[in-house]
Amino acid sequence: MTAGRSRPRYVPTVVLVGVLCAATACGSSTSSGSVEAHEPKTTWEEPASYAYTLTSTTQVLAGTFRVKVRDGRVTEAVGVDADGRRQVQELPGEVPTIGGLLRRLDKARSEDADTAEADYAADGRPVRISLDWDKNAIDDEALYVISSYEPNPG
Image (cartoon, one colour):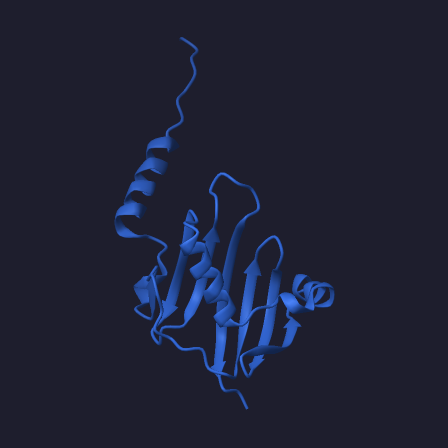
């Protein structure tokens, strides 16, 4: 019997899954029909007052926040998790409006960032914004997930 090194059999499977995933857009959030991915602009107009939940993973702002906006300004930001509570305490003015997030997206696009993508709800508001100015740089990525949107909360 000859001893030899065995080749891993999982590599072709991984490659096949990757190719199939790319071909079928596996993992895409657009399959539900309620979200349109990567549109260059939104037709949504930010109302003067609304509330939403923001989950942010950036170097500057990390955590989950329940945000209230009045007259186009953040009037209340409550940290929902430990990171969010710490951030609100240390950097209370860092939690943006949805319009502020859209301006960050527009700026990234105008500066030719490597990644400046958004997924939109059926009404045109963003539900996910992904930014990466330089794919070779560390810690310049940003992911914002917008949920529990309530226009003009009472």
